[in-house]
Length: 169
Image: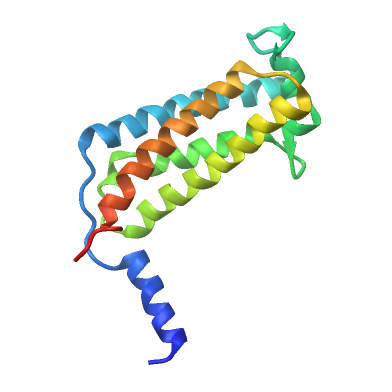
């Protein structure tokens, strides 16, 4: 067997191989609640962004939502970060619906994990921008970052077990 076919088999096994264990019900329910919370905050930030409405938040000192949400860093690749957050949480909510948690398609669970790794990296970038570049913190943004972190921890502790990763056969 050549290297290419061995690699293809491993990728195939990782994506759609053996069975998927069920997640504890409380974990899937908590993931959905967190996703809906993130979706709510992201919706509020997006409406405020496009409606040019001030957020219910301090606008002076270190806690300054207006300074953060109107900064250059509130755009990523010319897309408002609020829109990226909304898209992220629409997708996460779909991936955390009960039917998605019950899916036997390993790709659904891998997508949930991969998207949260990406989301957590982006949240760390945004927190760094707030602290190091902008010099202010937005409480609503921090709320989204905390929800993302909680989801990340929950999914990182759940999905690998569901997929049997790290278990010896």
